Length: 171
Image (tube, rainbow, N blue to C red; front, side, top):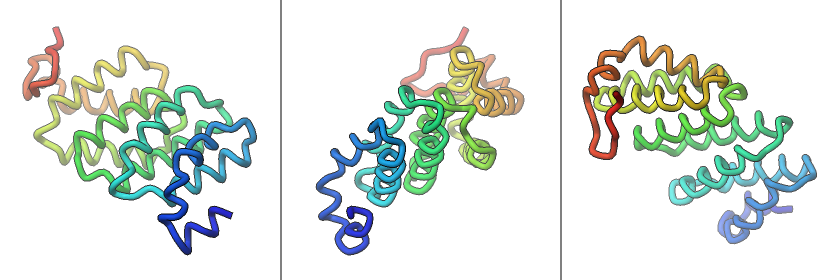
C-alpha cells in the first residue's frame, strides 16, 4: 500500500520512514525487499545521509542472501544524492569494506573515476584505502580500488602528501 501511496503523497509516507527502515531488518525476505524499494523511493537531498548511515549499519549484520540487493541500493543512493566528494568516497569505502564482494563492477569503476577527478583528495583517499585494505583484504572490490589507487598515488601514501587536518600520518 505504501508503494502506491508514495506516488500520490510522498510526505505522508515519509512520516513512516523509521518504521519502514525497521522493516528492512525483517526476517521475511519479501518484506525486506519491498521496504528497501520504498526507502529508495523516499530518499531525497534532505534525508539521504541518515538513511545511508542506517543502511550501512545494517549491511554489516545482514545475511548473504540480502547483502547484494542492499549493497546495490546503498550505492545507488550514494551516487544519486552525494555532491560532497569526500563524503562519497568515505561512504563508498565503508560499503567496500563491509560488502566489497557484493559490489558490482560499475560501482567500483565509478568510484575510481570520482577518485581520479578529486585531485585535492588523492592523498587522503590513498591513505584511507590503505587502512581499509589492512582490515578488509578479503573484499575483492576494495582490493581492486586500493591497488589501483596505491599504484596511482603511492608517492602520496609513502610521504604523507596532501594530509588533511583530521588525518593521522601513516608510518
